Amino acid sequence: MKTRTDVLSELRTMLADVFAAKASGEAYGRLARAHGYVDGYMRALLDTGMCTKAELLEVVNAERERASGPALRAMAELGEQAA
Image (cartoon, rainbow, N blue to C red; front, side):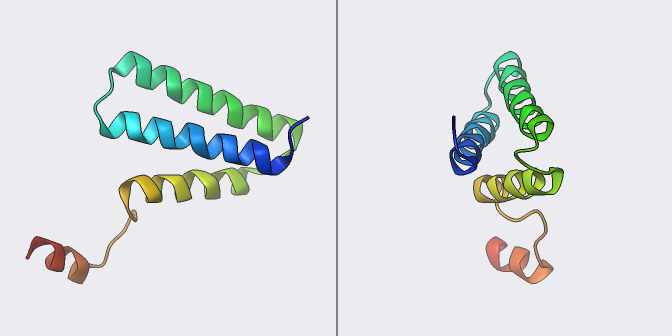
């Protein structure tokens, strides 16, 4: 049986793959299928009590931020990037 750490590591890998596929413009069908796998995996983690919703949201947010940067940026940061 996999440990909680193994399961969360696997989820992080799956999420990284989905975000990379989205960024590279992967075909909609493949991207939708990948989203479905991740959704099902997270549902199983919730149903088995291995993770809470808050924990899963934290993992998803961290992976999304790692792939795309922070969701919100200060206006000063945006000005610096444009220069």
